[in-house]
Length: 156
Image 1 (cartoon, rainbow, N blue to C red):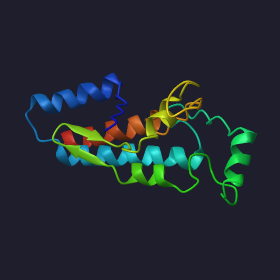
Image 2 (image 1 turned 90 degrees about the vertical axis):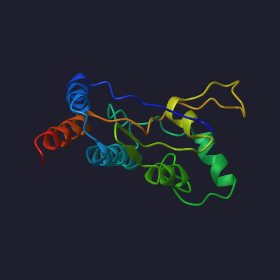
Image 3 (image 1 turned 180 degrees about the vertical axis):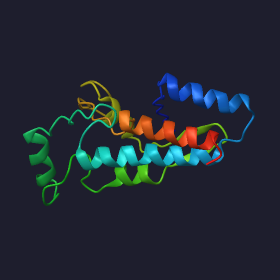
């Protein structure tokens, strides 16, 4: 099994979550909502073909890659990372959460190489693939998470 973790590193959000934990509250309801924000950010990344955290466009496919796909029977012009949509669907179906955590990701063997990129000598090789991050959150997502947590703190 492959595990990828992208950690939320926003001090304001972490401080508010820590306050909730100190109170000993079960955060499952707000964590469910946060998991939804994580999923939505990732699905937008596929739609925009850009890093969900920074908005940086993904590296376009090389001409040879496109030709190889067409030669292999792939028809039509497909968005990057979405020839058959399996990676996107795996993220969409992976939402999980608990009393003090929220997660979204993919259990596909090739998921990590697309998130982080690969080097030429990596198995199953050649694996020289540029990183095309599809997991992460941007500033608007962090604001939404903060609003969710603050609303939860206020009993909303």
